Image 1 (cartoon, rainbow, N blue to C red):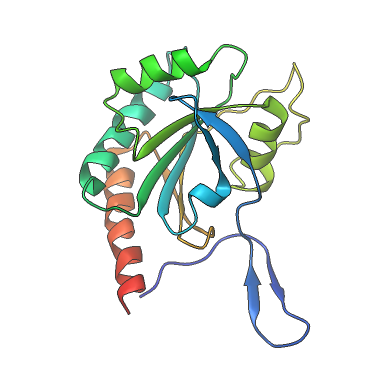
Image 2 (image 1 turned 90 degrees about the horizontal axis):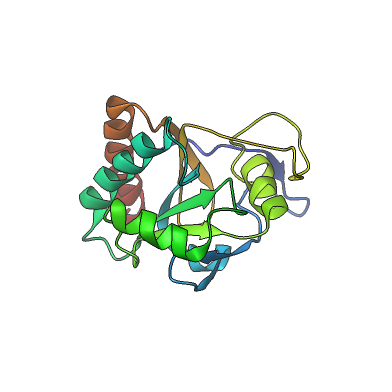
Length: 185
């Protein structure tokens, strides 16, 4: 059975085809200092999260679980992890690189990104639908989520998982496999 597709849907005017929500355009900088955009992730199954390097709460748990996901999928050439900082003022490229090293991030698979706070927060709210609260990405705005988001090769949301739960991450790993099976049909 295929995984569901999350997010708003429209019916195309010229046909009865359903148009599913896709992740909007973005451009950030990863832990290597390279520019990455939404286009770099199209054609890949991607797991997304939001974190910050100085977090002493759930973020280390999330990163440990992403390490598990990376290890489970390390032989797939079309798999990526995309971790966005919620604290771009402090999470510079060098800080992200050190954090990536701490968690064994393979930089060809796992991209930890920083950039414009307003854009990072807008994508969280209106692209991944990670948080329901309103905000402007300004100095007083802060988001945080324990959720991982599974994105398919077309940029559509296929699942949400509690990244602090080993059982939920096991489900994510299984559903990544299910998603790849969909592409084999």
